[in-house]
Amino acid sequence: MVRGVMSVPHVLVDDGGAVLLDCGFPGDGARIRRALARAGCGPREVRAIVLTHGHIDHAGCLAELRVWTGAPVFAHRAEQAHLDGIYPYRGWARVCGALEAAGRAATGYRAGRIDECIAEGDELPFWGGLRVVHLPGHTDGHCGFYSARHDLLFSGDLWVRFMMRTQMSPRIFSDDFTQVPASLRKARAIGARWVVPGHYDVPDAARLRRRFEELCAELERRTAARVV
Ligand SMILES: [Zn+2]
Ligand SMILES: [Zn+2]
Image (cartoon, rainbow, N blue to C red):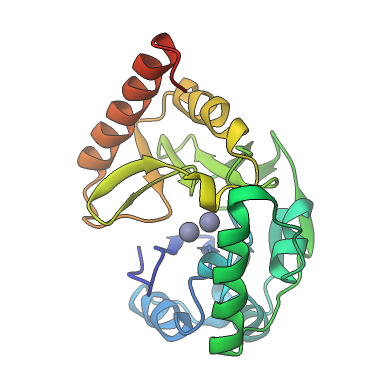
């Protein structure tokens, strides 16, 4: 994991090379390059850049890292509008749009481009295999990635541990909040041993797993009480 300005990008390394899973906020590029160097990798060892979604705190350094590595970018096609800053936010999510616009203006953000469009069930040949799990709601093309070899699901911003709180993707940061509970259930049904969100404080896999379970249990309680 790489401690970014806002989110937590990951650098996945094995004998086959490296994969960047999300690219952090603008300014996180140096941190990601250092993490790669610590793993003994240079830019040419990076085989792919994989995005959970196109928010600025996950794709902020995409353009820079794509040029630096020459690696293709894998993401759901619906995320290109987010990368380009032209997604038509509606309702509460307009807050997210305004924050992103301010972030782009303040940081000199440059939009990256998706080279390979991914979809539910695709198997990406990286890190022993990463299965694409479409988890819409946070964004329309928001995807998780399941590694059977590591029994681990990268769940992006479907849920987060942020500001000392565990929460599912909130309304103001969700393209379509109504889809978030179903995506949370879909992620839980995979039954992965580890579930790693896109924002967290302590890199403690067991604690994250417990928090994810508690969040899902809370969702079911609220659903039973019909307050969701
Ligand atoms: Zn996000
Ligand atoms: Zn995020």
